[in-house]
Image 1 (tube, one colour):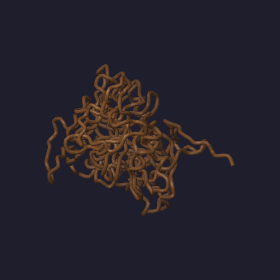
Image 2 (image 1 turned 120 degrees about the vertical axis):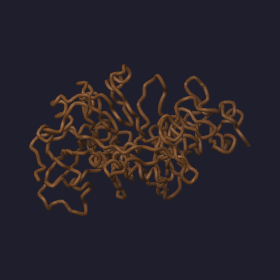
Image 3 (image 1 turned 180 degrees about the horizontal axis):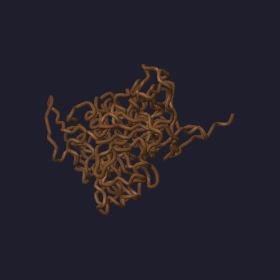
Image 4 (image 1 turned 90 degrees about the vertical axis):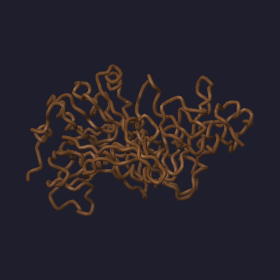
Amino acid sequence: MKKVYATASEALEGLLHDGMFIAAGGFGLCGIPELLIAAIRDAGTKDLTVASNNCGVDDFGLGILLQTRQIKKMISSYVGENAEFMRQYLSGELELEFNPQGTLAERMRAGGCGIPGFYTKTGVGTVIAEGKEVKTFDGEDYILERGIVADLSIVKAWKADDTGNLVFRKTARNFNPPAAMCGKVCVAEVEEIVPRGSLDPDMIHLPGIYVHRIVQGQHEKRIEQRTTRKKETA
Amino acid sequence: MAWDRNQMAARAAQELEDGMYVNLGIGIPTLVANYVGDKDITLQSENGMLGMGPFPFEGEEDPDLINAGKQTITELNRTAYFDSATSFGMIRGGKIAAAILGAMEVAENGDLANWMIPGKLVKGMGGAMDLVAGVGRVIVVMDHTNKAGESKVLRECTLPLTGKGVVDRIITNLGVLDVVEGGLKIVETAEGVTEEELRAATEATIVG
């Protein structure tokens, strides 16, 4: 069972095909699989459907796959901060399926857990409910949402061991665990691969059963909105 | 005279009680954190954090630590991190006591529109639909009228909804209104604003 690969491109070898469905972790530019995204750009795989909360910015994250027109459809909750996204969407070049953020996260989690659908209050009475089954439980309406199973998941973690156990750091965890769970195959990029036995088994965020391939690399980790406060001088 | 942004935020902070877990939206709601005083409030950031701290000092920004508005923030000694599915599990599951959110329109039946203007820039609902459907209490903080001077407190929303019948209380620059049977009830008026002025600026039915 060899899970560790030398480069992002090698880690994706044999997994990419045109028209495939990819689930990606990350929130904004935080915790995004930036190396795997770049490797998909280099591979030129096209007509992709990508489930990801956001679509990066124009020149970073999933935004670079928009520049190369490799994405056919996005499933996202928020696509601001990306002018090229807007342009392609408004001109009809790009399909977009808006999912409420929690619905998207739960669709991924459910798909990974063998749950094909679930009922939620989120979106009842809005455009999100159009065409979806409504069921009443205890006097309240809920809509049916489907679990997501992706051909491939791409995620980013802080540390991994060579069996694929993952540890995330701070809010960079976000969509990465549910995205990882919903893929038929999951490739994780990490900042550090540590020796087997050095991760505390009680502190594993995502067990290696969900992670099929791992690659270590250098991450730019760009900040989208740099907000600070001044130190009060005594 | 009416409340300014900070006064609206201070008024909204009065809605929070000791021990509450709360989610604050972007804009004026974010300012509410400045006015909680001695109350023990835990802020949730729906990207996966409870116990959100203030902005970092210059030079101490961490790209792995942001809020739902993608801004760099800090952690506190009570902070817990979790994934997005867990985060929205606690939202959908009613564990978050209140959400304080901005709005484009609110209707007298509690309908809320704050995510989309058809034909204009469409950015997405983010977590707003999940929040309004799941949290215990939804408090809207917004200007009473739009830039054209038209009421944002309406009989019916004209924009696509974020949630149907979800708003409990509306705090605007002119006062505070509750969604009740048959319409809105005036709770109080802003300093220097008369009830007549508040009524005149409101398209929605005011009862009581």
